Image 1 (cartoon, one colour):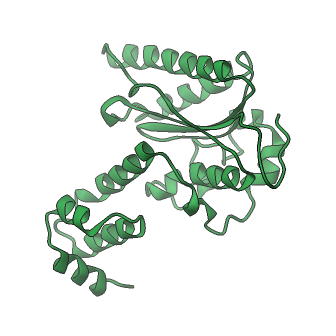
Image 2 (tube, one colour; image 1 turned 90 degrees about the horizontal axis):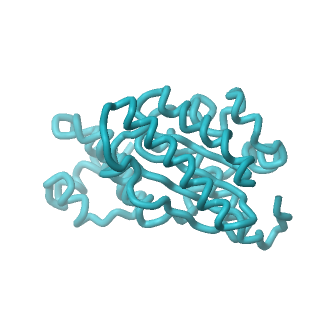
Length: 238
C-alpha cells in the first residue's frame, strides 16, 4: 500500500470505469452485480491489486484500485471483464462484445482527489435516483455489511469512507465519457414522464444546469426554447 501524505500520492492508485457496449445495461439483474463483485475479489489477490472502493451500476462499474504495476492492473481488468462477458453471453444466449472498448483509467495524484473520488463512486446510486442513502445500495463498497467488502483494507474505510465530505465530490473531475454517461442516465431516468409533467421537467433542467450543461444543449434535448426553460425554472424554483 502506498504511503499517503497531505500533498501527494504515489501514482499507483487509479480510478477505473468500465461500461456496457452501446451503453447497454449489462448489470441489470442482481445476480449479475453479485457475479461481477465475486470476480473482483476472486482475482485481486492473484494480480496483486488492492480494491479501495467500487460501485456496480446498471450499465457501468466504477473501481478505485491500488496497483504497483500497470501490467497487473491491466491483466486484472482483462481477466474479470473477460470472465464476466463469458458469463453474460451464456446467460443471455448471445454472442459478441459485452463491454464498450477498453476500460477507462485515471491516476489519483493527491489525497483530496482520492477523497473526492471515493465520495463520487459511492454517490453514484444517489445521483441515479436509485436510493437516497449510500448505505442502502447493496453493490458498492460503502455498504460494509456485504461479505466481500470485508476484504477491503479497514484503513481505507476508517480514514476516508465515512469522513464528512462537505459535497467535495462535486469537485471531482470525471472523464469526458463518465460525464456524458452521467448526463444520459439522468435524462433517461426522467424522460419517460417529463413531457406530461412540468414539475419533473423543471427538476431535470435544474439538475442539468447545475452540472454546467449549456442552455442550448438543454433546448435540443427536450425540444423547447430558452424562454420556456427559464419560465419553468422560475416557476418551480423551490
